[in-house]
Amino acid sequence: MNAHHSPLHTQGASPSEAWPILAGGRIGAIDLFRALTVLLMITVNSWHGVQGLPAWMGHMPADVDAMSFVDGVFPAFLFIVGMSIPFALQQRLRAGTEAFWPLQAHVLQRSLGLLLLGVFMVNAEGGYEQARMGLPIALWALLSYVGVFLIWGSLSGGPAFARGWRLAGVSLLLLLAGLYRSADGSMGLSPQWWGILGLIGWAYLIGCLAYQLCRGNLTGLLIGLVLCTAYTVLHRLPALQAQTALSLIFSQAGHLAHGLLVLAGTTTALLLFDGRLALSRSRRLGLALLLASVLALAAVVLRPAFKISKIYATPSWALFSAAGCVLIFAVLWALRVGERPAAEGAAPGLLDTVAAHPLLAYLLPFVFGWLGAWSPWGLPLWLRSGMPGVLFGPAYALLIAALVRLLVARGLRLRI
Image 1 (cartoon, one colour):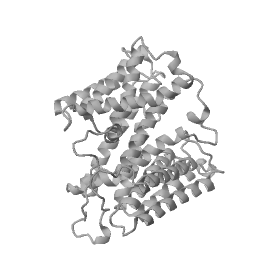
Image 2 (tube, helix red, strand yellow):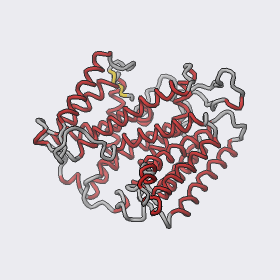
Image 3 (cartoon, rainbow, N blue to C red):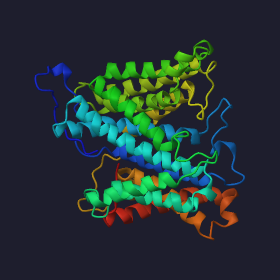
Image 4 (cartoon, rainbow, N blue to C red):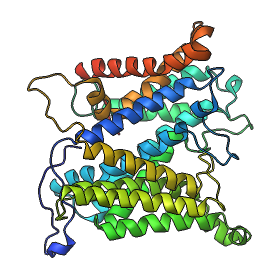
């Protein structure tokens, strides 16, 4: 992130066309929100398969008109992706990359990286025929992480590996894609549902495109929110689904619902941090709370026709989730969480490190999971049921956070 407080204008543009002006340095509330969301994602993932969990500690079934707090974790990450977009793009703008297509090329590169990683991960979860692949699926998955690390990782704490290593990573992923065999007898990978990271990649692309098209204008972002909501609603209208051409046009409702969450985060970031807005702190907070209220009201209005469902990415689920995220972040911001500067020379805390390296923190449990699946050892039964299984989740997340801090301190990086 690390955006700097600097006005950004296109050459010859009028002040009204300026991009948002955001303060430099890391934002404590954003870092805390991101770190807690990643740790929650690790926790709820570790609860998957634990016996005896109450319903509110797991995902609600697709056809049940309800959502648990677990169903709100993924939306929270999409929301924080959206909050980061203005800060991240401001860095590119300050570096002199203000034209639309160079900026979009950078965004596309990041989106494609997330899509690629998501596709490899989701194909390892199911739909494969291991007997025809020539190697165990656990080894296949672990090698895919090696390939990803060679392309986007670093052991020096700085730039990615040299070109030769990156080409080796690309070659390894191509080899693994060629070895993959689907259960239906076909060869090669398929998008399936894109995986969590793939869905984030699509939503990030939608959010960045909307932000660039309206040049960070709040009105434009609010229009984007309305359009995303309208798209998800139109997708589910029976009259539209009966028309083949229109149903194809409106076939990406899930991605637009996720894009809605990203745009809600971007809008909140500008309401609270854009230096162009001559607003008091209390006025900014009031506008954020108003945004949360409008999103929640829209969800209530749409819910009778479009039930709450994370699996189906319904508009009511997306809007309720967005409203909750705006409200939670507004409270953190109002309480000035994380605004006190760290002592000079102090080592980053666990949450600080996770906030700065969310992808590494998210992927490590999957690596350990595949290592466990490939080995004769596994978690004892008592850690996979009841209260011990529940407590193991947050404890495991904290262990991952400690490992991330250790690896980062030794120069390991992974950034797409």
